[in-house]
Image (cartoon, rainbow, N blue to C red; front, side, top):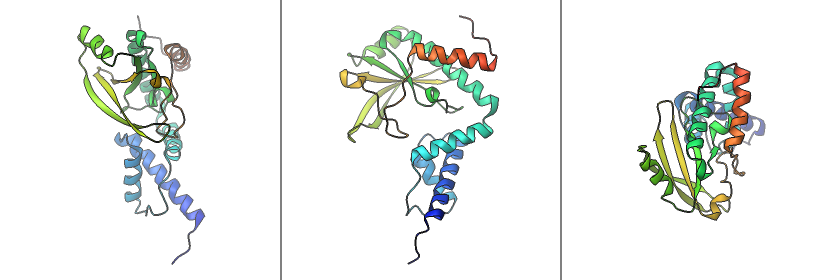
Length: 214
């Protein structure tokens, strides 16, 4: 039986992570696991020694975006954050928090605006949307809680001209705790409306793009 070569294995993990990042960036694949499996298959690599972690893929994704994303991706990120700000203002009474790629800066043309909205009434947000005649679809999202147990959350998805906006319904006191990040399992980064306003003020100044008229 051939001996394991740690240096070779690490190089292979990095190659798989880089290819998985390219798949996510160029093909719109949202599942890190699926992207890693596709990457390994394309490279003809055995997964016996394990696939790279999501954090390794995320690092390669940021590198890829820095090299190839350019001003077009920065403009798209700015548009998505503006869309998030508009939705958060509308839903301000539900204490919305921006999470995911748009909050973390890794969003691209395939990304949704992901908001968490909080209420004791699980139907309150849906009623709010219906009262304003805003069409939406409903999904169920599987997550893994901090203790490793599986959970399912309701998600309302709104199709806007510039982006899809998903509203993850956070119901009850337990939902106040930040969800585990799907990337590294740590508490997920959440931006308030004030946080996003500050972030946008810097982004618009850096890109020298005038803010939209209100």
